[in-house]
Image (cartoon, rainbow, N blue to C red; front, side, top):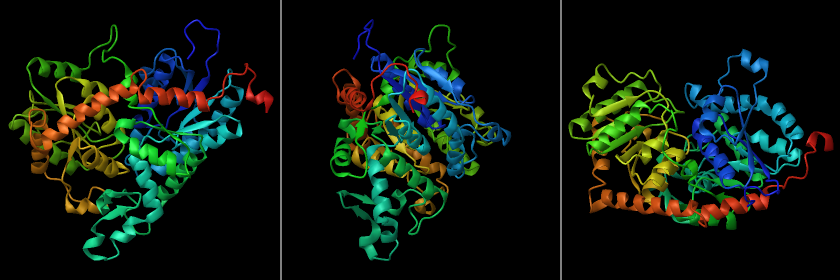
Length: 494
C-alpha cells in the first residue's frame, strides 16, 4: 500500500453496480474502503437517475461517472432502478434493457486516463465483463449473494432436486441431500423459483445462465462474507469448484461504512430521533423490513400490521420500513400503534438502524444485504424469505449459523411465491419470540442471540487490520489489478 505523499501511482479500479440499492450499497462501501486504505483510486459508474443516491453514499475522493441511457430508452420511460419496477417479474427485461449502456461503458474504458486496472461489475451486468475483457481490462464479478447460496445455486442447476422431490419417491424424497455437503437437506420450499419446478423455463432461467457465464468468465468473484462465517464454503469453491474463478471473501462490507453520524449540518431523520428516544427510555425495538425489490400483496401487509399491533399491545416496540410508500396498512393502524410503533415510508439507512443500541431484533425477508448487516451488527433475525435466493439465505442463517428463527410459512407458499397469507397471529408470536432473545439465557432463542453476538465480534476481526477480509482485499488487488502504465488511453493503443 502506498503511503500518503508517495510518488507511486495507485492502480485504478472501476466499479459498476447493478441498478438496485441492495446491490449498489455494498459496492459503495467497497469503493470507500479501497480509497481509505490507499489500495486504489476508484471510479464509480452510475446513471443520472441513480446519481444523487450514489453520491450520498460515497466519500468525496471517489470519482462518479454518469452513464446516460440512449435517447430511445429514455423515450420509452424505462425505469433506472429495480425499486421502480412493480415486481421482480420484469427483472430479466430490466437487466437486458440496461445493456443499452454497453457502448458508453466501452467508450469510457477505452479512453480512460489513467487506464482502468480492474473492473468490479455486478454479475447482472453480464455484458460488462465481456466488454472489459475485449479491452484487456480484468474483471471481478459481484453477485450480492453469499457463498452458501452461490454453491447451492450451482447444485440446483446441476442436479435438479425439484424433480427428485416431486418424483413420488416416498418419505425419503421429502428432502434432497446435497452430495458435497450431506448435512444440507433441501426441501422444495428451500429451492428458489423457478428452480422448484422439475422443468424450469422462462426469462429467469435465461438470465441465470447469463449470470453464470459472466461469473465463470471473470477473473474473480467478490463475496460479501468472511471466513469465520462461510470459510468451509469459500474453501470448497476455491478448491473443488473448477468451473468458477477464485472467490474473495472481503466482507462484511457494511463495516467499512465508518461511523454512524449524519455529518456536520445534516438533519437527523425522524426515525433516528425516534430510536434515540426509545433508547433513552430503556426500550428495545424490533426492526421490520421485508425488502424493496418484491411487491408484497396488500392483504399480506395488513396481516403484518395486525401482527405488529398485537405484538405492540404485548410490549414490543417496532420500527417498520414499508414498501411501497403508499401501502395500505389498514384504517387507523398507525394512529393505534403511535408511541409503540413507527412506520417509515421513505428509504432508510438500514445499517444505521441495525447499529442502534436499542434495536434487538430484525424481522427480515432475508436478502443477503440485510442478513449480513444484521450479523455484523449482532442483531438476531426472524427470516421470512419472499423470493430469489432468500430461502437459501434463511437456511444459512437459521440452520448453519443459528443466529435466527424462521417465520412459519403458510403451506401454499411451499412451492414458491407468496401463496397463502401468513396470519397476524403468527407474526405476533414470532415478533415476541425474537424480542425475548436478548434476555433469554436458555433455549433456542437465547442461543441465537449469543451466536450472533459472537459472530459480530468475528466480523469486526475479519475486516480489522490483519484480519481475513482485510488481507483478502489487499491480495485481490495485488493479484488481479493491472498497475497504472502511463496515461495512454486504450482507444489509442487498440
